[in-house]
Length: 120
Image (cartoon, rainbow, N blue to C red; front, side, top):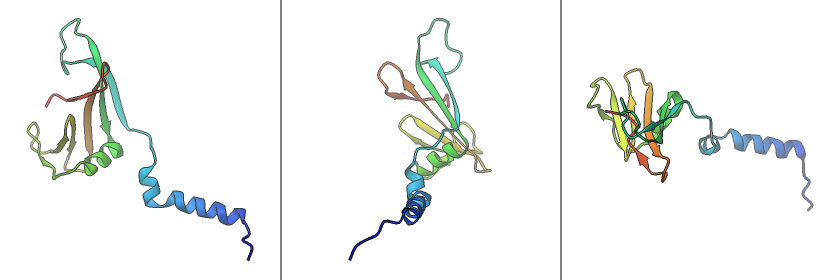
């Protein structure tokens, strides 16, 4: 028996594979948020302090996916009781009552290690 290659069938198979939830979850997607280059003092850095890290502030769907994927239950936030927070190392995410999330982390430019990206 000889198998015949059908371009339309092959295309449909590829499109179905790309549309499946497991494939979509593993694909890279655009980030939502902001970044800034700053020093080790998160707020009100003294003049002349070396700007040696990038601060990432992630929002919207990006932050919500990270919040949901972070292990553990959200706990009442120490800084804002109306928020739930999760922390994994230096990555900290908060979730408000409406379901909106925000995550923060800093990356040291000298060695690529992470640092806390928010004050509280």
